[in-house]
Image (tube, rainbow, N blue to C red; front, top):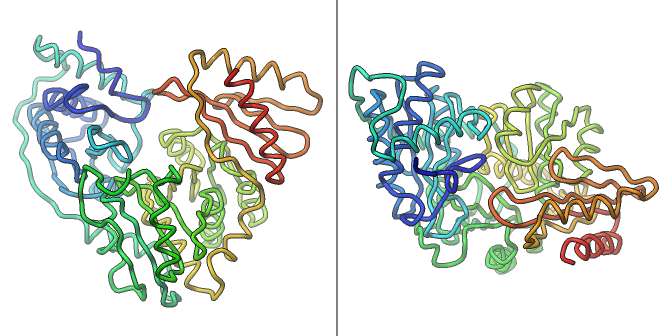
Length: 460
C-alpha cells in the first residue's frame, strides 16, 4: 500500500510537488474525499478553489477528476484565498477543498479540506480515513471505496469573490471610518487578489506592496510570522507616513499588523482587541484562545464580561471548541482569527477590517490604541532542532516540576506557570524534529532569564 502519511498531516495535505505528491495522488485524494463526504453527510457536490502557485490549477483539476469519478459534482470557485473557499463552503453549504501551501516555499503545495459549512476535518475527524482510501487508490488495485456511483459528476464555475467581499463588509461596522493610509504587503500571494475587492470604496488610501500574483515569491516568503518578512512593510509604513500596515500570508487566511511607528503588533493584542469588539455586540460571551496567546487575552476578556476558554494550538481544535461552546470569536498567536459569523472559520481579512474599524473610529494612533491590549513581555516562538523531543521535554519537566509554587499542565506539550506570573510552553512540532518554545513574563528582563534557562536545558 502507498504511504501518504508524509503529506497528509494533522490538519491538511502538504508536500513538495512532484517529489512527494503529484496529479495522480491529487486524483486519488479527490475520490477518497468525495466518498467520505457522501457517506458521512450525503453530499452530492464539492466546491474547490486554488491559489496562485503554478501547480495549483493542475492539482485542483486532477482532484476534481477524482470527485467526478465518484459521482459527485464540482463547483469551481477558481482563484481565491483560503477564507474565500471557506465562504463558498459556508454560503453554498458544500464540502470544500482549497489548493494552497499557504506560507510554504514555492515548490510546496497542499489541500485544506473542510466539511459543508466550512466545518473542519482533522486527523481525528476524517483525514485518516481519507488517507487510507487514497492510499488504496494510488496502488492501482482498483477502488476499495464502498459505493459504486450511478453517474459521473459534472463541473460548473462560480465566481464568489464579490459575494465574499459583501459578506465580510456586512460583519463590521465601517460607517465611522476616518480616512486612513494603509500599506498592504500581499507577499505576491492571494491578498493581492482579494484586498482590492474587499476594501474598494472605503475611505482608505491603500499603498500596495507585492500585489502581483507570483507563486515563486520573488520578493520574500509569504510568511509574516518570520520577522524577516515584515521588514519591507515596516520600512514602507514609515516611508509613506501610513497609519497602519497589513501583511498577509500566501493564502491570505492570516494577517499581521504593523503600527504607524513600523512596529509589529502582537497577534495576542489583536486577539484581545477583536474579542472586545465581538463581546460588545452582545451576541455571546465565550472567546477561545490557544494556550500560547498572552495571558492578557483571558484577563481582558473577563474584564469585558466574557468567558475565556483555553485550547490547544491548531485550527481544527479551535473550530471544534468554538462549536462546542458557541464561542463568538477565537484567536491564535500565529495570527489565525476565527469568527462565529464566518462559519467559525479563520479569516485574516475580517480581522484586518476589525482593526481598521477600531483605528478609524477614534483619533489615536494605532500604537496607543493597541497599548491597552499589550501587558507583558513575550519571546515569540523560538524553534530548537532536537534529536529526542520527548526526552528534552522530560528534562525540562524534571528541572521545573519540583520548584516551589510552579504548576505544570500538558494540554499541548508542557506549560509551566511560575509563581511570579511568568510562564512558558514547550511543545513538539507535528512535522519536524523541532521543539517550539514560547515565554511570557511581567517584563523583558525576566522573560529573557526564563527563555535562556529553558533553552539551556533544551539545547544541552
